[in-house]
Amino acid sequence: MPPKPVVLVTERIADAGLQLLDQSCEVCAPWRQNRPPTEEELGAADAVIVRLFKITDAVLSAAPKLRVIGRHGAGLDNVELKAATERRIPVVFTPSAQTMANAVAEHTVQMMLALARHAVAADRLVRDGNFAQRSSLQGVELHGRTLGVIGLGAIGGRVAEICQNGFGMQVLAYDPYVDEQPSQPAFTLVKSLHELLEQSDVVTLHLPSTPETFHMINVETLGYMKHSALLINTARGAVLDTLALAEALNRGHLGGAALDVFEEEPPPLDHPLMSVPRTLFSPHIGSTTGAAMEKMAELVARQVIQVLNGERPAFVANPAIFADVRAV
Image 1 (cartoon, one colour):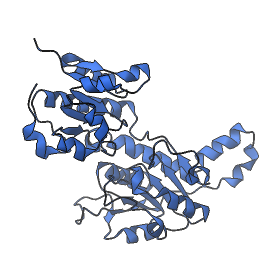
Image 2 (cartoon, rainbow, N blue to C red):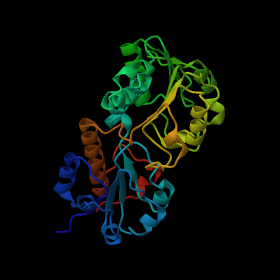
Image 3 (cartoon, rainbow, N blue to C red):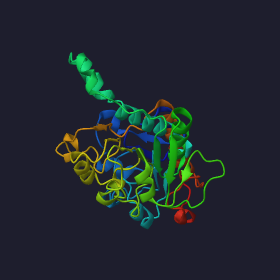
């Protein structure tokens, strides 16, 4: 009887995914010892499942047996896709529409509300015994305001729906890859980023990280925004030039910014943005709900097993090479 394929799981995933893997694979989980994988573990792996662990060319060179990479999440920022493709290794992932759209959308909305109503500062006033200073925290009502959604995937669409139906916001949307107004929209599609930024009271980003979207929000585009506008990023850190954002906030150009994602994670504590007022941060937890984590773990585990069994899964980032993949 041939040995079971070894699946290296670099970071904690939900038990639902681990249980699927245990049925037909040998699971190597160095996170249980609170450490990264060793070279020996990489060298023995037939498959690897990662969350934020970086799959670089060097990592791939250390893993000669590797036959599939599973990305627990929708983005592929931490996987060198070209290097994997050159080695004929399929990369499977878990699209947000299938796993985490609602979780990230809700986190986006709660960051929007917390920023608009100074939630963190209000909590601090009470804890510090400064209750009488409450008049210093004048908030912004979202009802009747204009929301600008950049990126019309599952997450952006869900944010638009929540904000229009729940808060009575007017929703504008821009996506460079969408040129037709949907038949039953929760938003109005605009033709240019400039138009959306000029008209929006709140701007929320829901774009993938690609060469085309790198620093889409920069010195120039921030300049189009209203001085009172709020900016939310729960998408990918690279779509936003954080140095430009820090400068704009320091100049009083924006009303505030809330970020769940950063160009470098964790962000350096000496980054200029860390000391700027009117900011709110969370540590890339937009998709971190029990339901979303279970869905992602199950989907990535199932797809890794499919590749190891010679089957083609639904969500492959480099599908052109799949014909060359063979079963165990």
